[in-house]
Length: 489
Image (cartoon, rainbow, N blue to C red; front, side, top):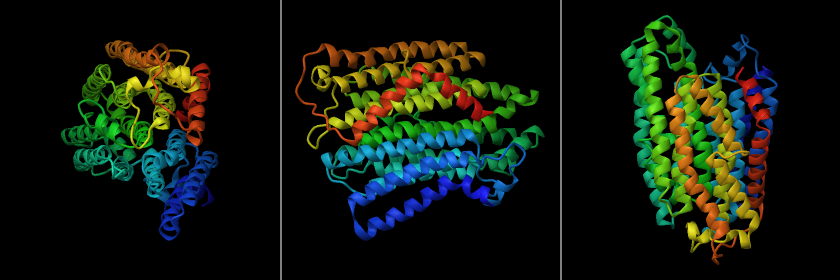
């Protein structure tokens, strides 16, 4: 049916693009053609989302979607919303990576194809209705990330980042697969809707199912970089190419959080509806809340002592994983909406900050130390101003997008009865202000240090877009909030 084609249009376009540009690269090795080709492919995929949104089936009329995917993928508004974030992240990564590659070493077309593959894995995650497709999406994305992290083969730091990410990622995959196996053993199904029915009928093994869910959340906690599975993130984000670090810490984190969201909403939430399993649900909420609190505190406290801005942002990203987990803990409509808004806000402010870092890096010097930013406002006032906005937004100061994202997460957590977690989150945000504002003070109140010589071009456009949207969504957040609430139904 024609509806099936339009619903799957983004996946079709992206999968064809991956094959096409891999073949083109093998035959012609034309760097300009491959760069613009992958860029246009992602732009077309981005706009195809809006076509697909017009064909979302109304409730109770999902039968025809099963013909194309056998019920392995779902087609709803919130999935397409996250698709837009993932594709936008891929577009920004491509347009910021070309000049960065040339300045650091040499331009290689494989990077653009790997970005397409990673985005395709994210699109599979966002539409999954089955643990099998969820796993395939996660591993498609992760395998691309392993290669991208170690992409600069002449850089010891980059190779080290790739090896660490691969070894620890493979270890986390074992938890994920083992957990899925336990879930199948407990329910004889991997489909979310089938498991929901079995929970409602109490036809499952509570021991195996709870153990399976615990192992799955452990595997996903690694992907999110939540405590105590966060140790890989600082080394990987610091050693990886800066534009790739931006990609992994935003789209990669958002996709893993969305995977948690799918499991929490479609499986875990069902346990709260029945007296026999309500205690299990409360215990699970408490464990997730403790992980969230520890992640925020550990990430922010360690970031305090960092003198490398890239590493500081890496530990900051660990703390932000803790904030996003608050929406999983709440596991209600407010929490789901908060995850949607904050994922977008975090993508804009984190990506913008990493792009500014990449603009000044050279083959001989990364210029990532805080001292390298001394007096930046005197020489490059726009970049200093943009970086200041991103830092203030990450700290959760109004009127920027990060403030309203945190506000939504805090409100949803309070409504779910976890006031203590919100208090810890507020304290963590106050702690983070020290290192975020410390960078701003370095740019505005220290003597200028010659060193940073930013490059302007397409990456600069990406900075402007991130800056404008961070301000716009901070001043007019209701438009995004209303839109995500509408998509969540």
